[in-house]
Length: 125
Image 1 (cartoon, rainbow, N blue to C red):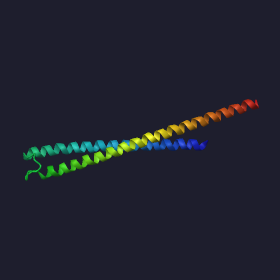
Image 2: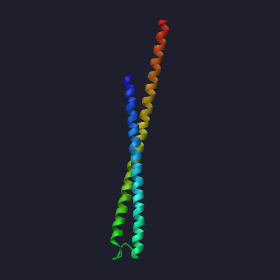
Image 3: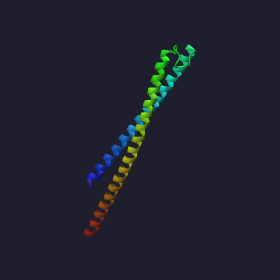
Image 4: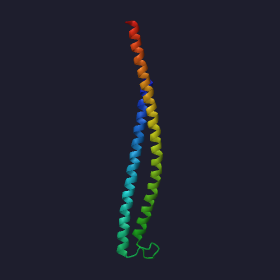
């Protein structure tokens, strides 16, 4: 019976770990979004200062080009993290289902143990 309790604790740990990973991915996605927005503002300010918005223009600001590239890289990374989040969410759902099964088995074992103990004491008394 002790193994069932250990199994429930293990499954609970796995669920908590998956939740932590999911929260970490959410935090990183939000941070990348914030950084990309900051870069967007900087790009706009640089273009306004130079008076050139055409990225193919020979005098387009170098800083704006670099900031655009960085923003695009952040957006790509954000997309990759979103894919990882989807996978992590499905793994969390699986872990929660396994935890639920383990808890039901442990509950059933506890009820059977209680029934056996009460049945035996009635037979003795």
